Image 1: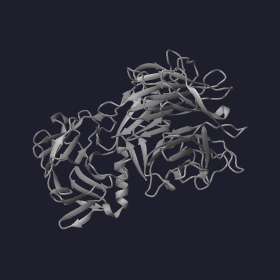
Image 2 (image 1 turned 90 degrees about the vertical axis):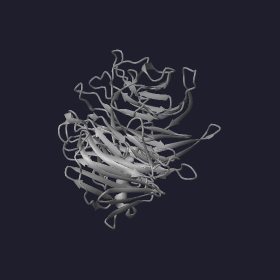
Image 3 (image 1 turned 180 degrees about the vertical axis):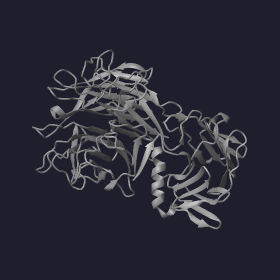
Image 4 (image 1 turned 60 degrees about the vertical axis):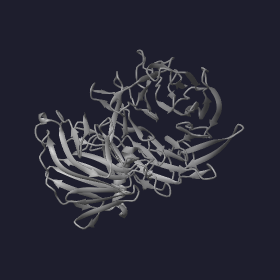
Length: 613
C-alpha cells in the first residue's frame, strides 16, 4: 500500500511526466492525479518497466507509451518513434549565474533511477502512465532575496519546444504534431501554502523556477497532486460542509446541513466552479437554499448533480420529519449568488419518512430515497414547469425494520435503491441493493444484489454509487477475516445479459483497516476507479481524522483486493471525518470532511477537498 499525502510531503521535489500524446493507457480513465502514483506502483512490479544496465549507463523502455530512454553520466536521452530529446541538469541555485553541478553516475532500484548531487537529487520513475522526472532538494539554496529557486536544464534533440501561456507545460513537436508533453508544475511549502512555480525557455536551456520567499521548508513542487480546499465564504461553527458532495464536469456541489440562510438554520448547498487555471483553494460561486426553509430541515444532507441540474435532500423537513427534496436548474446568469429551488420534489407521506435522505440525478430524472416509508420515488422535472411529476415508485419488502431508500444511484435506465436492513436468507440486517431497469412501455425489471458473506448487522448499502456497468455498495460495519469491523465495499458487475440477482463480483477492503474505521461510509465509481472513504480512521494518533482509498480495476475485471493507493489531507486533524462523502468524475475527485476545521476562523465548519491535475 502506498499512502499519498495530498498537497504536502516532506521533501522538496518537482515531478513531470513524459508521455506520448496519442498513446492510450489502461490508466487513462483515472483522475490524472491518481495516474502517476499508481503507475509508479505498477511499474515497480512489472518487469517491462525495470531499468537495465546498458554500456556505461542504463536504459528503460515504456511499451505503453512507446517510449525508450537511456541514462548516463551526462543526462537522459528519450526516444519516441523516430524522434529524440535530450536533457541534462547542469546548474542549481538562485539568480542569473547558477552554481554548476558535477556529472555523476546514476543509481538504480527496480523502475527508479537517481542522480545524487549534494543537496539535489534528480530522479525518474518508469511506469504505464509515462516516465516521470523529479528533483528532491534537501535545503534552500542561499538567501531567497537573491531571486527564485532555479534549476537549469540543457535541452536538445529533434523536437521543437514551446511553452504554454501558463509557463507550466512544455509541448515538444516535430512541426507536424505534438509528440511529447513535459507538463504540470505546482509548488507548496510545508504548511500547504501554494507557491508560484513556472518554466522559462531560453534557447537550449529550460529553467524551472519557484518563488519561495517566506516559505517554510521543506517545499513541494509537485505536478502530480494539486489539492484544493473548498470552504464557505461566511462559515459558521457546525455548518458541516462536506456532509455530501457531488461533481459533474467543472461543477461541484457540497451540502452543509447545519448552515444558516437568512438567519434560519435550514441548511444549504454550495456550488463551486472550476476556475480557468484549474481547481484552487476557493469559496463558493453560489449558495442553494429552500424557499420554505425552517430551523432543523438539514437541507444539504444529500446532493446530486448532472450537468446543469442539481437535487438536494432535506430529510428532517417539517416537525414530524416527513422530509423533502428540491430540484435546481442552472439560471441564465449561471451558478452565482443566492438561488432557491426551481421546483420542489415533494414531501414524505408520513411522519418520520425522512424523504431526501438520498438523492440521485440523471438530467431531469431524479431518484429520491425515503427510508422511513420504505420507498424511493422517481420524478421527471420538465423545463418551464414549476413542479416535478412522479414517474415511478419503488417499495422495499421489509415491513418492520424499514430502511429501503437509504442510498440511491442512477446510470442510464438503471436505478439503484439500497436497504441496509434487508434480511438475506435467515440473517437480518445483512443489506441489499436493488436494481430497477426500465425496459419500455412502463415496464421494469428488478435484480437483487447481496453480499455472499453477509452477517448480522453488516448493513451493506449505507452508501452506493453506479457508473455504467458497475455498482459499488458501502458496508462500513462489515467484518474483515471474522475479526474486526473496518468496513468493506462490494462491487457488482453487470452481466452481458443485464442485471440479475447476484452476489458480489469483488470485495474491496483497506490494507490497514482496524476496528470501527467505517470504511465504505462514502463510495464513488467512475470508469475503472473506485474511491471509498474511511472517516473514522485514526491517523498518527488523531482519532477520526479520516482517509480515502483508491482502487484501480485489474486487467480482466474486478476481483477481491486492497487499495492501490490511499489519500490523506495534509492539513488533517483529529475528528475531521475526511471521507465522510466522496465523488469522482473524469479527472477530478472530491472528498468531504464534514467536521474539518477552518483555520482562518478557528471553527469546525467542514470542507470539501478536490484532487486534480
